[in-house]
Image (cartoon, rainbow, N blue to C red; front, side, top):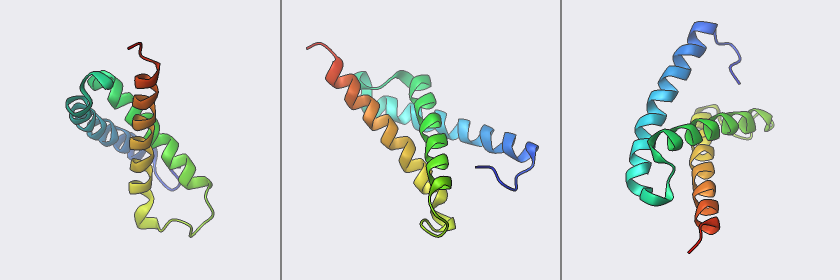
Length: 95
């Protein structure tokens, strides 16, 4: 997942990803409202989805996803996880 990165570069990547996830989580909290998980909950779900997306991209055969599309593919995984969890939350809520 972090092949070729030094330890300080990994920490910088994690810090930037966390900051971006916070701002996107805040926007998703405004968008989803009651269906969301709060700002920090959305942030954690987005970070977990991003990490899972990076792992999935790593397991795909080389050349299946172009190098320039790795980060957008991982971001799509983050939004997919948030969407799936919001749908599950909506389905399990009592009416």
